[in-house]
Length: 415
Ligand SMILES: Cc1cc2nc3c(=O)[nH]c(=O)nc-3n(C[C@H](O)[C@H](O)[C@H](O)COP(=O)(O)OP(=O)(O)OC[C@H]3O[C@@H](n4cnc5c(N)ncnc54)[C@H](O)[C@@H]3O)c2cc1C
Ligand code: HEM
Image (cartoon, rainbow, N blue to C red; front, side):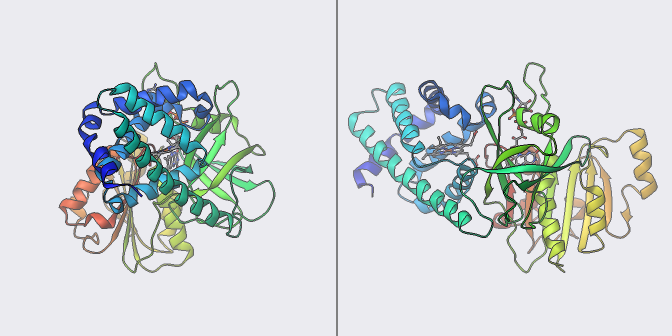
């Protein structure tokens, strides 16, 4: 429990935090990795280089300082972060290390403002926040472990099938080495995967959304090969490793399903909106709805570069006969052959009553009369700029914020 004095002192440092900005968390990470280099095996070092994770941590700390007397306002963020932490197997003993470097960072960067009493207040405040995370993470770990097919920590899985879905996306199906059941998940959740690429300095952990419905025996993820847009940058470490070096029969470590972005059943229509590889959680939701023989209206709206990069197209088309499904795709650019192929199916027109293809960026305004704007649930996944644009359109079309749910395939960012 924090005293009123502690709360007041932590709040007094908000202007200091805001003026220093992400400089604080960049310094913090440099300090922590210098003194505790073993943590480089846990953190995604590319997110460090690109600045995504320092920014996510900074906004969490600033939000905490601002809401320290109203922690309920943070519950959504705590839930999201706790899920992500569990997918990386973060343990209570990690918290004092992070706390130590956080306090040392504030002391070293602002020695005058960070007096002994301010430091004491921040130490107490960090302790409270760490306690909230540790408790919630323990609950999530135990809940998972106690369910049929659940487990704690890393479990070995063998790759049993590798299937190309489109030019850049390949699906990987894993079965547990112990041949026991695997725990069910909510459509939209992800797995934490740990790999050790040969000649690579660190073990690497990444999250991948489950792309199929739960079946109690295996897990499917679908991974986009990440190239570097800049010749000076390295191509994506784990995605290329999975595509090029992990073959059927190979074994890797997987942490149990996690994630607060998942399908929630309500007796209302559902709109699944994705771009690029953001299609994976939507595919899981669609498969799950089909397996439950759902009779609700489902809209599957997807944007991708071209026909070659269109994943799961055939499967979604097949599901149009099993669900009350309206399927629209926007292609950014098509080459001559692709154009011809689509023209023969009727580009820009209704195809078999429910499949529609469009050129250019996704635009929901022309189809507003068809969408369940007043009551449907909207699930979004894709690049942040794409989701910001779509969310803005939905808000302008009258959809309430509470009915728009989204996942960022990287350090979280507000839309
Ligand atoms: C909840 C969640 C779910 C996800 N689900 C999926 C999914 O279903 N499918 C999927 O494919 N991915 C998914 N991801 C993304 C996935 O976790 C990885 O981030 C992705 O595969 C890239 O990892 P990587 O190791 O290949 O690339 P990284 O090595 O992490 O690199 C990422 C990108 O940064 C570039 N880069 C490297 N160095 C620099 C630098 N110095 N400066 C700038 N850029 C640089 C790389 O070229 C690459 O394009 C998900 C992520 C999250 C958080
Ligand atoms: C109170 C303390 C902490 C806070 C406020 C915090 C905050 C955050 C936030 C905001 C994210 C991004 C979440 C998202 O993208 O959705 C994150 C991710 C992460 N956190 Fe924490 N965290 C804390 C403690 C820890 C500890 C103790 C560890 C372990 C050493 C840790 C390891 C990680 C890792 C590995 C990620 C994934 C991001 C990446 O690798 O780039 N965190 N945390």
